[in-house]
Image (cartoon, rainbow, N blue to C red; front, top):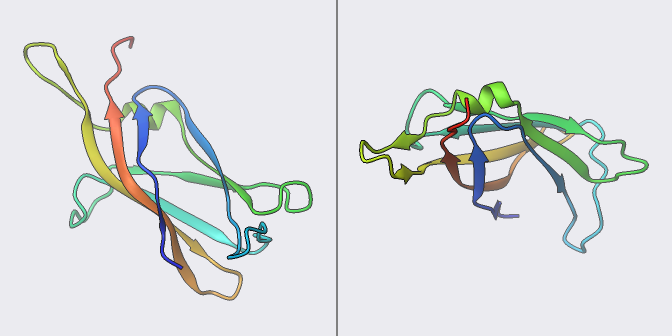
Length: 124
């Protein structure tokens, strides 16, 4: 299955946290037991270094089947690059991200991708 597209906004200095529900082709939540996830942000797809990395927590698969939380701490979002012009007009910085899932059987699937808008923090 092709990765879903979702453009996101991350605010520098604020905690970023979202919950994904992974479903099969019939819309039923999939048991994520034994799965792992990796997600990175890069300024450009071809860059060798990521500018940010997401953390993942698989929720209880009995009560929250198919759910995983992806997040980034306020300290880590503050380190993401954002651009402000000399005229003090806010200019948001766009980059790319994706999330890959490794299934219990070892197969890897990209599940989500898109642009990542980084909003600069003012209240430091």
